[in-house]
Length: 122
Image 1 (spheres, rainbow, N blue to C red):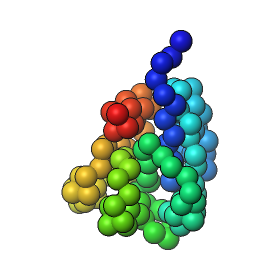
Image 2 (image 1 turned 180 degrees about the horizontal axis):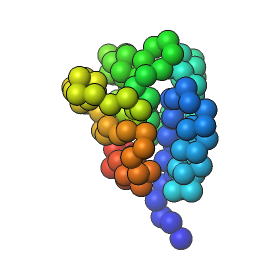
Image 3 (image 1 turned 120 degrees about the horizontal axis):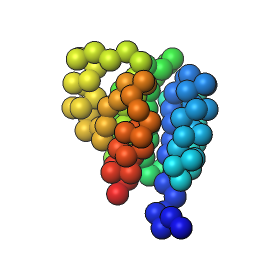
């Protein structure tokens, strides 16, 4: 029996297939994923509470970096992890300066992302 509490994780990514597959993986890892196709749809759901956010760096409209900046400014206090298909030194540096709990490429192993979520939410 798993004695870990169920972690609620928001996935903010405009890639529907990635959201589905990552959602299945998180669910199989004992987490409760909630997917959002954009930063704007995430922000519209302000009643939900999450243990961790998994943010795509590049989104249509507001970027994941801009979303994280806004949440930090508002004092949201929820840990966030970035995931990206287009990794570069400048973006990685910007993400780390925001205080992210992790930074991954979309092809990195899912087990590493899950472990980062668990560490961030503890």
